[in-house]
Image (cartoon, rainbow, N blue to C red; front, side, top):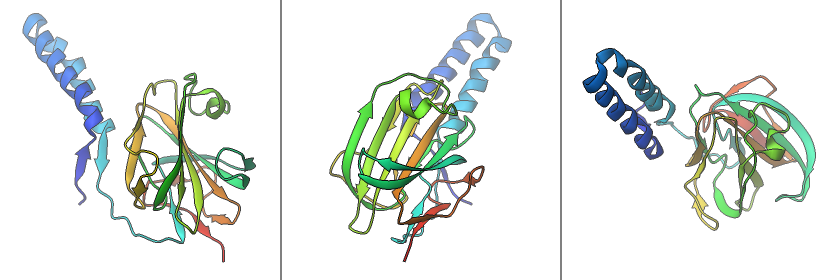
Length: 212
């Protein structure tokens, strides 16, 4: 059984909820402590980060997030790849693991944070108008773009990497708090192995494979 860790960004939420529960319980009675304790338990659940056995393979791209594949679209990427590309959009519900993982190893050649609105992540216009954070990875064999997109409840995108840093395949690089979506943009030369509606897991599910 894998170990489950709590992301450090979750501790303030957990601690504050417990302190509120103690305070309300002491001042108003035990029954008033129930709701903040429920929130504390949920925050422990939401900010979980289970260990995962990542199999390193330069020929494949792992899912960057847990969730459900919302769409697979062909388009021309002008942000990083500058070529015809395929975009896989993954919706993360408030019950999914929200830690994002690197689909492949490589160097962060591009990084951009964009302020925006907070419409629901499952809406079609969310990737265009919402707050977003994009990183472009390159490793000599492939170039990809991974985009974190905030949702109606997700008010902060967290990144643990910086431009120029080298990352490993499956490495945790950030998260989005409370409901969101993640996009993986890859060249047309990558064969997409998932379909709309599929459930995926970050660092476990193979999203694509480099065509021969």
